[in-house]
Length: 310
Image 1 (cartoon, rainbow, N blue to C red):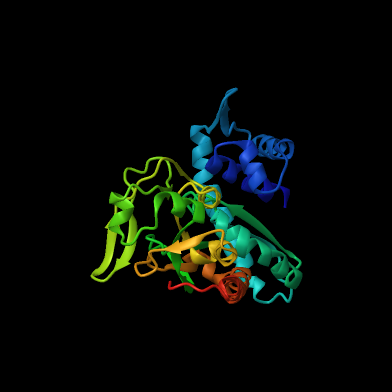
Image 2 (cartoon, rainbow, N blue to C red):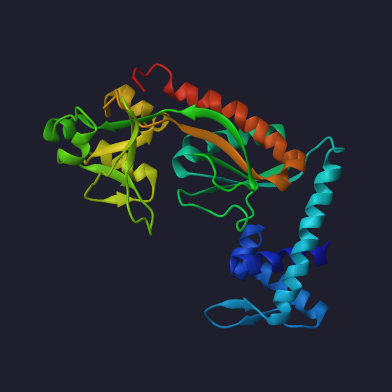
């Protein structure tokens, strides 16, 4: 289906803003992707993009063609999903998104196991701690910590994951151990913050005797990647707020010590998210069912044997 393949490249190029990105998303080299666009333009007898040395943008007629081409691709995907029920061997690709720490420790190790069961399915795993638009990026499944605000996404909860505040012994020896949440704000403590560009304020929510309370914690530096915060904590640079399973090994070894165990952060939901339209696709259901079953067992195994009040 060369013509349909060219249309797919065109659609993703418009959505991602470059031929290179559109081709990469479809596992094509820039040269092949460029050829597909050129073949499509030759077939249609029109120019689909305005090209400069710095950017590419659809022409007016290219934008019009995109609106209809997108409907064609979505209809084709839906048709393939409908008949896939009758196939004994699921085929195709699944684009999966997950935060870095969760993906490295939980999701990525399970992908080869899933592929062993369904070798004709290709898994495209994308790791990012930043907020990503699932629809714009054409993500099939996101495995995340937290619940979605977008009602157009379907969520299947895997489990509640406890969170923990912890720091290295060398930090606690130097700055002291906080005895109450207010000490984080008033006691000169250094909190290691996960913060993204554009964030106006930052706070930690802790469970107190009177219910959840926000504390406007501060620190000398922050990062938009969770594992960097863990490395800083291990180096004695501050207190970190992490999902317990991510630091369980460090707590087990004594490299990190839990603090404020009587007022921990609330648990965070581990869940699979996917667009409602993907419910009909058998391969998506297979992947989600597998991950729900396996992720919970893996997370619980990582936390097993570590004593904490959270």
